[in-house]
Each structure stands twice: as structure tokens, then as C-alpha cells.
Image 1 (cartoon, rainbow, N blue to C red):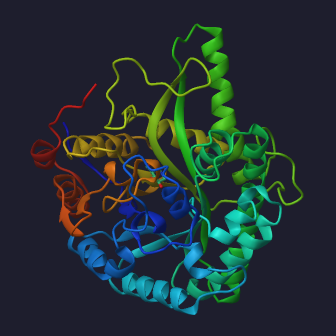
Image 2 (cartoon, rainbow, N blue to C red; image 1 turned 45 degrees about the vertical axis):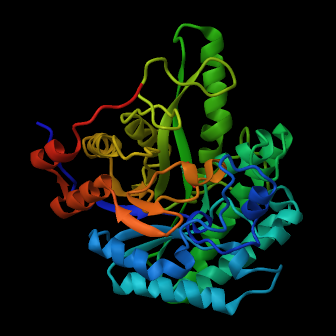
Length: 427
Ligand code: IFM
């Protein structure tokens, strides 16, 4: 009754982002944001998981758990510490790491931009400045030329909506702006960056002699529901929030249709600018105004985010209806600091996906090792592997053992369910 198998061509993997795990870099926008005192627990990405030095240990752990797919990112501020100056050693570092992954049978999915910017780019106005398109593309092309023989799958930009909303509308992330106009400008430029990068990556990989390239951007998608279904204000706010946060952007980035909140731009042209849908899914928003809310009495994680497993299917269907492309869950996971309910969370999301009948090909769990969780710093743990930040000791959690067992069984057996997934959520 509880058991299910994964479809034959469905694979599990893990996800991470450079700034959240690497440590040791003082040249990026989030290091500066942390130094300015914005992180709730006073931590900074300077420590994180020290992965830049310990990547071999982390790869060995992946192998031990049977993980064959890894979504990871490169740190722009390491590769291009000054505008136009590329650091050969940083590129060689990523080459060594990716080569080792490939040799170990771990397939890489490379994220080019994941929230952080080099300081010089941030000082120029980052993605609010129209010059960002050329600057982002110059960097992205270096990455693809240098690493493109080892990597066939790319995410151009991670969660543009989260980046723009928090940094340019909500003001809580760098650069701390609060302007709808800036939010829209950033999304427009990021859309232009993605569409241009999509074409560039295919072109460069063709020049390198490869034809199996796959490119997308990572959508952060939520399910939006009105608090009271019959309340016209709740419904209106719900429709508006959905469009302003994700609906308009997905259409623009995937199909090149510029409509609110994305402005028209000469580089945003009709087409299909994704080879697969990349979906980061965590929660549902219950709407009664313009702020986020949670359904009363719903199960929640340690950050108060509603746990709504069916939502992963609802957001997949939304994108599949937009364009019938293969679906990759490029992030899904939960903040469960004591690892008490993560197994159940995982089980329910995977089961919903595998029973959906949709062509879901990958599921990358966010995240592999606990890491630097932006404003929450080191205090919010999403990992399958526990990290003691003082000693940098890694310990596979119960949920990590469950994940490894599900990979080995290519599904969840009754025994696995019994052993790992019988736990309660908090409300
Ligand atoms: O940690 C983040 C990640 O960087 C982007 N997606 C959501 C995760 C959890 O908040």
C-alpha cells in the first residue's frame, strides 16, 4: 500500500549552490551583505561547508550514498574577480572537480548564476543595469568554453523571481531595494540574459562538437490559493501574486512572451527557450492580501513553510501545460533541523510525482549537505548530510540513509516506508 517504484527513466540527485557551500570567498555580494549584519544568526558564507577545499570528501560521500546526479554551481566572483579578468586557477579548480564527478559516474547539472554576484558587478547595479546582459553572457561563455566538454546540462539562472523579489522589491536581500519598477527591470534583464545564454550555450557546445546540450532556468514555483475561496479580495490578490511572482516570468523565460511583470525587450523574442522545465518547489502560499500566508492548521516545516506534497504535481502540470517539455525537479526539500520529518516529506513528494503520469525525469533534493541558508545563515538545515560547522564533520542523517536506500531500490518499498517514514509533522 505504501510502496511505489520510480519510473524507469527517473533519477534522484542532490542540489547545491556555490556560495552556500564553498566558503573562503570574500568577493561576492552576499559576503558583503553578511558583513553588514543582515544574517539572522550572525554567520556568513565565508565559512559555510568549506567545500572549496573539501570537495573530494563530499564527492566520496555522494558515491557512498549511490548518488549519480548532482546539480551544483560555480562562483562568478572566483572565476571573474575583476571585470574582464578571468582566474585560470579557479577555472582549473572547477574542471578538476567536475572531471572527478564524471569519473565517479556522477552526472553534473551546472548552474551558472545562483543569487550571488561579484562585488564589481554588484557595484555596477547588477541585473538592474542594462549592461548586465553583455557582462553575464561574457562570463557564461567562458564557463561553457572551459567546462563544456564535461557538462551537457545547464541552468542559466536560478530563481530569478526570488532574487528580484527579495533584493529589489522586498529589500531584505542585496542590494536592499524596495521598488516595483526595479523588480520589473531586473526580471526583464534576467529574461534577456537567459534567452541569450540559451542560444549561446547551444552554439558553443556545437562548436565543441556536442549535440546533446540541455538548457533551462530554475523556476521557483509555489501553489497560490486564496485564504477564502469566495472572498473576491483574496481571489484577486491570489491571481495578482501568482502572475507577479511566477506566471508572467515563466512565460517570458520559456516562451519569450513579454507580459507583466516582464517588460518588452529586443532580446525577448518568441521561441521555446528551454529544453526541459526546471522546477524548484517547496510550499504553498495562502493569500488574503499582498503578503505571504500559510493555511491555518496546515503542517509546516521549521521555517513555518506549509508542507503540501500535492503542490509539486500542480506546479509541474502548470509548466507542462505551458510547453510539453521533460520535467526536472531541480530543488525540493525542507528545513527540518532535527531531521524528524524529512523522510516523510521526501516520501510524499516523490510518491506524488511518480503517480502523476507526467514526464518527470529527475528529482534533485535540496540539499546534499546542510549549508548557508541566506538570511537564515547556518541556523536552517535542509541537508541529507549533517554538517558540524565548527569541525566541518559530515554525518549522513537518517533522511540521507533513506534517500540512499530509495536510490538503491529505485523506489520506496513497504519496509523502507515502515523503517523511515512513520513520523508526524508539526502544525
Ligand atoms: O537555499 C535555497 C536555494 O538557494 C534556492 N532555493 C530555495 C532554497 C531553500 O530556501
